[in-house]
Image 1: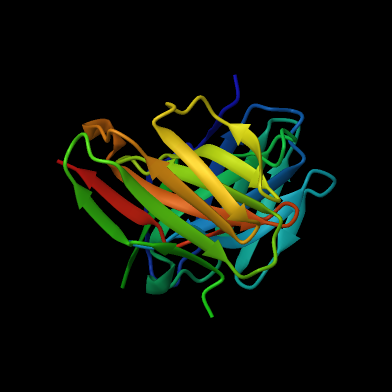
Image 2: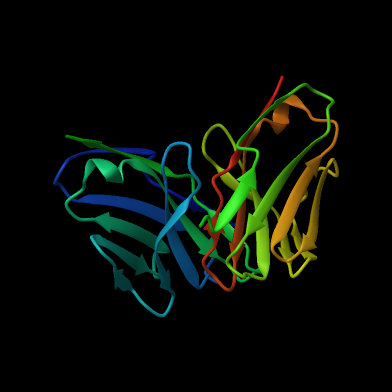
Length: 112
Length: 110
């Protein structure tokens, strides 16, 4: 069945360190992937996306890596800041009418 | 200048009642969605509308009825509320791939 999951439900890092959040997906037909950040009491906020014809994409302090061979997606946050504390979701678009399938979510906690 | 807005933000009600949640987007998007987020933060799509037409209905009980008066609005009406309906409901919109989410409505059924 369709599944987008995360290896670690919680991640605690020291301020200034780099964070890596991982995600596994199972649908080979998915061609578009998104990372969302959800702060407490708010809706998911778009961070970065990547299409299946790429294996890396960089934004401001964030990098998404896509490994289609093993169906793995990761989000790297450089120099993690307290404001990065949130739940992070990966999502895949499996070409079924624009439907996004979300992973479990990883809670990132940044220690000052 | 909120892109996707929802009302109310909090909704507390008794079992058996009927309630509605409203959503509006000012992004000019053609497609809107309703998601349910449970207590474990799992996000699951419920419905999708494209230009007022239903395109995704994810085996949601028929007590839930979405209504789209125009492509900028997608409301969710829930009949005969049950305890298990307690969750945070998110509206989202998109023009192509990236979905933009509203702030959520926390529904508590007592």
